[in-house]
Length: 214
Image (tube, helix red, strand yellow):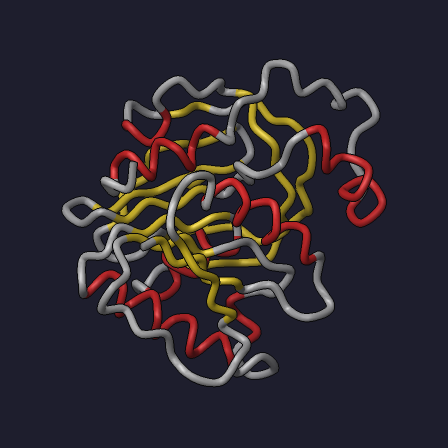
């Protein structure tokens, strides 16, 4: 079973999680757990997990107590060696939970050409990917290695050196169908509305293959 860990606050854009969940559950058994809710999900029957994007920052734990629980959940997933994919905030949370550093910076949004490393997570994926974020992993967590970068961002994606853990700053679930909502909520460069060369959604299928969910 695939567990989607929803980290979007109640005042955030729920369609982020909705789109990622729809992509992740395509033909797969799964359930969603909101880290904002009380309680901790049972992991005994979880085969893999995806940690979603969020408008929160990992450094806001004093104001958002659920972030401490989310860190604990990530550490438990890693300790159990459950295949895990962190997306955007999930990228930051996984690295933070494993001792890395995340800092706020300039907001980046749009389609960006990046350098994807030789990792099976990126099989068949174009180097033009959709991004919306203002926080950055500036030092990966313990055991995490950088597997993708951009001119403006050294640690765009990471994976654990020996465990089945991957993280990406970009949004695999972002497609042209969500563009109007993203423009309204975050703005988007006027000259970057052509998604014909974007297939970042394949990241989720690649992860599912690596996690043996297919």
